[in-house]
Amino acid sequence: MPAAGTRKPMRERFREQVREEVKVVALNQLAAGGAQAISINAIAKQLGVSGPALYRYFSSRDELLTVLVIDAYNDLREAMAKALDTDALDAEAQVRLLAAAYRAWAQEEPHRYELLFKAPFPGYDAHAKPLAEAARSLMGVVLGVLHHLDSATAEKPTAYENEEVLDARRANSENHQLAVALWSRLHGFVSLEIGGGFTAMGLDADALFETEVRVLADRVRRAS
Amino acid sequence: MPAAGTRKPMRERFREQVREEVKVVALNQLAAGGAQAISINAIAKQLGVSGPALYRYFSSRDELLTVLVIDAYNDLREAMAKALDTDALDAEAQVRLLAAAYRAWAQEEPHRYELLFKAPFPGYDAHAKPLAEAARSLMGVVLGVLHHLDSATAEKPTAYENEEVLDARRANSENHQLAVALWSRLHGFVSLEIGGGFTAMGLDADALFETEVRVLADRVRRAS
DNA sequence: TGTACATCAGTGAACGCGCGTTCACTGATGTAC
DNA sequence: TGTACATCAGTGAACGCGCGTTCACTGATGTAC
Image (cartoon, rainbow over all chains, first blue to last red; front, top):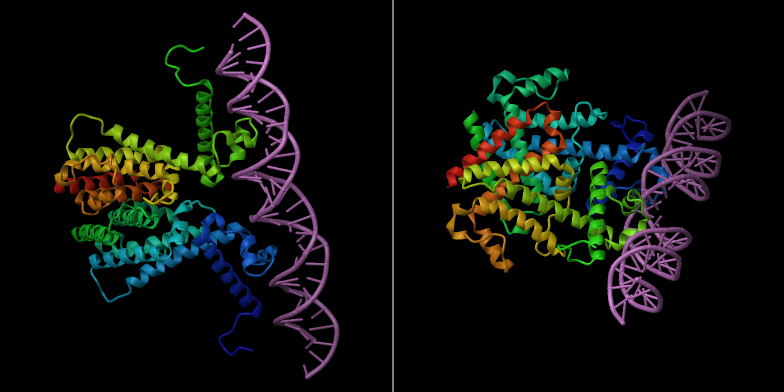
């Protein structure tokens, strides 16, 4: 009988624990054979359990995949947020940190990074709300960095309610365009690097990245 | 009995024709359900033929997929080469044309573009030589544009024999780094655009692309 | 502390499906004399 | 022009596989009295 701090009923705690185990095994399969290799039956076998047992924890294979994508969004966001969690730095330095964190996460978790971008991008009208929220929250970190560049759009970028207002403001925001350009370049570099395009050509990926980041930082400095 | 111009034996011509038909149907399936939806049996059914029949034309599903990837590389390369097939232009203008052609092809053939970059990047040591050649040939077009910027590396970039010499020269070439940066940005932009990331955020993709291309062209002008 | 009951994790069989691939074969088609 | 033969496209059955998911069930586990 565990002491204080254990508020949830035991069965619920158990459920959450098993869900985590399932996700871990699923990520192993992802790393080993790609997203389509994630299979309910194979996961069950690896957990020493029979197939249908997992339906106690995930209603379908689709739900499992969705959860993995959301987790990846959140992980990447937290990695970036953590990198920026330092005492006051100017925007240029923050962009450098952000870029480094983005690349580092993708290098550490290449399969999860691919999972993020091989899935269709979650639109506003997507049936999966949590997914869209996770994606927007990630972009919120980038916007946060460029935040003080333009005081007209200076509100908390993660806690919106009305999406239409948000859309209108975004479309007209210089910062948002800058953020997207930043993200676009990071994604281009990182996905080529992960795919092996650079090393296959005998190129020094670190040097290339340095150059790209320097260009980005310059642009941010010019805008500020 | 066809007249002059028909040199190949009829059976061989027939084989090639059927191979093309198979590829067309395979591309339809790719567009409809992703690369993993390409299935020998389903293609056969759609052609009004029984499954094993296709093994007369492709030795395996893998061979079919490889051929599709090679075709896509070649198509994209030809689209870019064609765009540059104008009377003498300076490097800056050529970069603009190249970028526009790259994006246009990806927009017209989004599924084939994805097919290219979701496949593992063909390295030198890849067992599939034709694949690696097709990929290098594509890069050759980009290098051709930046060609005259650096006379030290000025040789025909597509007709190499010795790969090790090629590697060494590439690693040391400023132009090659510029070409890769160019490609990296194009890929980043285009893959986000295809994925729907921009429109999902209410952004004007054309305007973003214009900005990115202008930055690229500036950099090329500065280098020349 | 002990007993009765409700909850729910996990089982095993089954359904229906589609896949890639092999094999021995039939029958048409082009070719050589 | 006519006949005999070799080539080869396509068939249908079969193999073995794995998948997601449903269902009725057993048995353990936590809970309420």
